[in-house]
Amino acid sequence: MKPLVIVLVLLSRVDPALAGLNPLSSEMHQKCYGNGICRLECSTSEMLVAYCMFQLECCVKGNPEP
Image 1 (cartoon, rainbow, N blue to C red):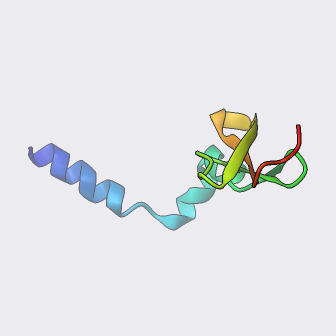
Image 2: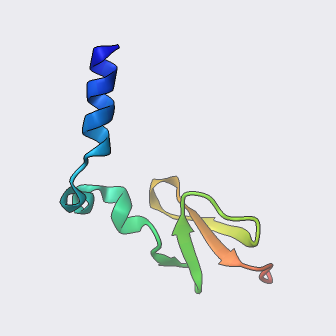
């Protein structure tokens, strides 16, 4: 139990400067497919139109034409 607490404390105190080293952070919210945005998951008001790197979804607001 004690090692789990230690791991959780360390994960909660991750240095924001290290976020740039995460390859996923550079792909998040990147433009794709015209006016789409790469996200982990499209919201209900968005439509999935393609996939980005690292299995992110390219989401476009509304219901675009095919």
